[in-house]
Structures are given as structure tokens and as C-alpha cells.
Length: 273
Image 1 (cartoon, one colour):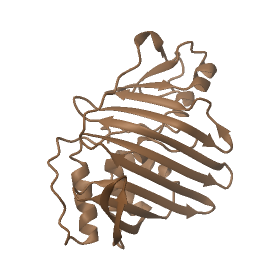
Image 2 (cartoon, helix red, strand yellow):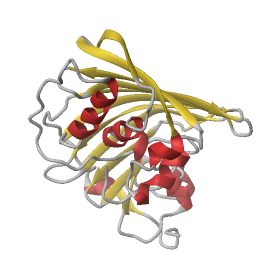
Image 3 (spheres, helix red, strand yellow):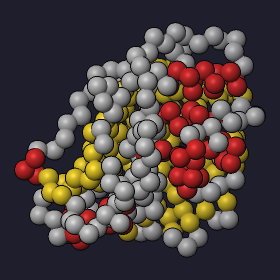
């Protein structure tokens, strides 16, 4: 995960641009005789070694007052030579209102580039992309509305959360995108799970999980100890969360490029608050 937390919401739907710091992986096959809880712990350790991956995700949420929402997209991530991520949200629909053209965000080090037509129209920006420095002490509310929370796409955070489970069990073997995996299922208490994360990231994780009390999860782990699929769902006081993420391309070379300079505008002065 990023050394700094980016606390920005995409119109109420939680999605993320993020990273897991680490070094190259020399992943060995997991031991088939490990207890289910040990497999989760091993997966959390191995994901910390991952230097790149691709994730496809669908997140469905509902709220008694705000209505239903759906976010669907994919992200490329790398930690070397510097932290970088390329997030594309094809569908962003919250409370029956969608974001025309979707959302695109590219993170390079301490800078994020955001492309949202509705945001450009609101700010009067004539360039398709807006550049925001993460070193700034604050971010415009208009930008915060479209930048996502990285934690729901973050492989490292996902595997840390599920290690809080006290009832995980193996429920069989299944193929995920052509790979053999073992399917594990269980629940974790949100308050205990978020304490597995760095202190600065815990509050954002609670918001991502809609302050649910308990979350049911399913994780499909391949022979190298890394998850290929993670599912989360939960409900509380009429609010629901249903998320499915597919991971692939571990430690494979990825290309993440910033947009051309002539297509990038700066965030208007006076909006970083």
C-alpha cells in the first residue's frame, strides 16, 4: 500500500489506486497440509513480496438514503522503480447517477493525474487531465469526489484484513481463470480486521467497508500462495457491500505512463482545501 493514504471518494463508491511496497518474489508452492488460517497468514506475507499485478473488480453497494451504486474497473500496479498505478473505472454509478465517460487515474510517485469530464466541466479545465500533487496538505472537494480509495483494489490490504478471521475453512478446489486454486471461506469482524493495517489507514478502511460489523469473505488461493480471486460481502442497517476482485500478472512487467504534458492542466488555485 502507499506509504501515504489517499483519502478520496469516488462519488460515494469506494475504489482505490494503491500499492504494496516490497521486493521481488521467489514464491514457493504452499504446503497442502497447512491449516486454513495458516494459508491466510502465508498469503498476507507473500503479497508483501509482490512488485506488480493487475486487478479487475466489481463493487456493488447500497445505502438506505443514498441508494444503490456500482463501480467496475481495473488497475495495473507496480512498486519498482517507483510506486505507480493506472486505474480505469468503466462504470461509476451511484444512486442512479453515473459518471459519463467513466474515471481514469494514473499515479506516479507523489503525483496523481485524474481524467473525469464532469470534473473538468465543473472546474472549467480545458485540458482532459488534472494533475494533483499528493504532497499538498489538502485536496479540493471536487477532486476528492472522483479520486478513489485505493484500499479496495489493494492486494496487500485485502489479505491483511482476512487474517483476522477466526472461522476460515477450506471449501474445496476450483479453477479461476484457468488456474487451479483452493477456495477458502469465512468471516472477519471489521473492527479487528482494520487493526491489522497501519494506523493511518484504519479509518479509511472502516469507511470502505461501510462501517459493517462483520464481513463474509471468500478467497481462492493458487499453489504459489497468492490469491487469484477475493470476494467480500456484508450488510448492516440497510447498507450492503458486495465486491469481487480478480488478481493476475504477479511480478510481470507493466507499463504505466503519465499523460502527455500538453493534455494536462493544473488544479485551479484556491481549490486545495
